[in-house]
Length: 112
View 1 (cartoon, rainbow, N blue to C red):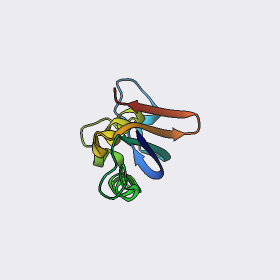
View 2: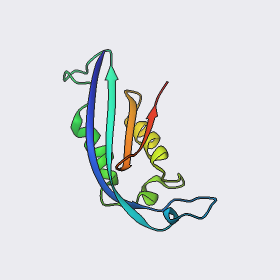
View 3: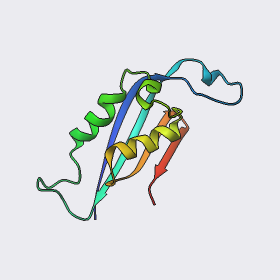
């Protein structure tokens, strides 16, 4: 089994949709640290699990300096939902995504 890890920093804004009062409902931003984990039994024709550049384009290129609500559409842009969205965008080789919203606050999505 081959495993690769890619760490990205994304600066972007979001507003949470919550059913209770919270300052997080206001427009605000973070410098997210996103760590993507991908694996495969076999390497592709180029000898890779997934090209790091593809991860950067699909994730950093779509989220950095953006309003996350606009990118995720109807999905509430919590760190948890962002982690799952990222894994889904990258496909089945991506088995784990960590989204650190701020120091000490990290959400992790792992596929079964």
